[in-house]
Image 1 (tube, helix red, strand yellow):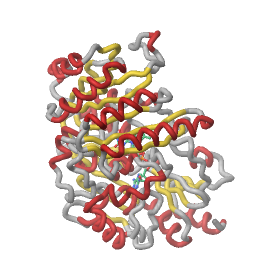
Image 2: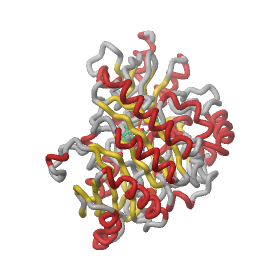
Image 3: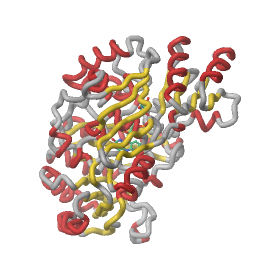
Length: 457
Ligand SMILES: Cc1cc2nc3c(=O)[nH]c(=O)nc-3n(C[C@H](O)[C@H](O)[C@H](O)COP(=O)(O)OP(=O)(O)OC[C@H]3O[C@@H](n4cnc5c(N)ncnc54)[C@H](O)[C@@H]3O)c2cc1C
């Protein structure tokens, strides 16, 4: 990009503007997935909505690629690009709570850790992801599945308003009553519709929870999965719980001679009255002998960051696949039993997240997130440290996905998809796809925001 344009941008922008020769550029161009190694022409670390407008306008004017980065967790690495402009929102992480209205406003680059830290002192929370380093931005715009989904819906179901910089450089407010079409598309349409500089969420009374992981022998995996599918269908909605195939990390609560062994685990979080937590966990203790567990009362933010250390930013290669699942049939369980125990490294995992309860009480066309009749979102999350092992790990993810796909829906959760899943976009949105295209034509006819699971205008 020519130097005069960069100088002009520096004059307009309050945050840092970094080009390849600047100190900090290498850190500024990197994202969570260590497999992604891209070199943008310029990174704009925005400090306010005006900075975002300046960067959007420059992208519009020059026609170069534009990447928008919230928390940077996108597995395909959508938060960076080669030769284009990156809007890095990590300088905009403020969260303001209105405790009496039970709402919070989060800036576009906040993480769930930032969010929880701000809301916890008021005994309030909303649905976020399973770990705390994920961005509020990308997670909410694609859906938002976490411990509180069964009780309070997806993250996007709790969104009540958004400030958005659209492709023409305007700032718009979107709610159920203002720019309703944009607000509808933002709730599930991922990063396709603009840069959200501020998200407003409804909050719920959640402070301390009862939760943690329980590890069972692989020989009990069939019993655990069959129990789980029955149990979670009508479990109390205060319970968020998912099964996982997991290699035991070297943690003190796991017997030392079992570190490195593969288990089936259930990770559960009871957000109801804390004194009922132990009782609520009884079914998990009855299903099979628990080899190791770390379960008990904890602040919600501690539960939400308990696994952060397993996923260090930039140090793991990521390749993921996902499907929505209506029924976890015996055949689907057989496919899991065949491939789950082959999980190759401690960081990799398979989670079968429940998306019933409150998430089912939203009509499929009320937001862009269409799969309201699916009971589960499965993610086969390949995450490994050594790039020389890429082929083996990617093969494990693909073989596992191929085995479960016949027992799953055609679509999968956009936030768990890989870069090679663009062909599934239409299936992911089902009957909402045409309306998403119409809204895209209205707000981004030139497809400026195309580095995402792209909805073409
Ligand atoms: C380790 C790990 C754990 C995860 N756990 C969960 C989980 O528990 N539940 C779950 O639902 N998902 C989870 N995810 C998936 C996650 O939701 C997606 O990766 C999501 O896209 C991440 O959002 P981000 O802001 O961190 O990522 P980014 O890479 O910054 O952004 C992802 C996409 O969203 C867009 N975007 C981000 N912020 C904004 C914004 N403010 N305005 C406009 N567009 C924006 C980007 O342009 C990009 O297209 C996890 C991912 C990882 C890597």
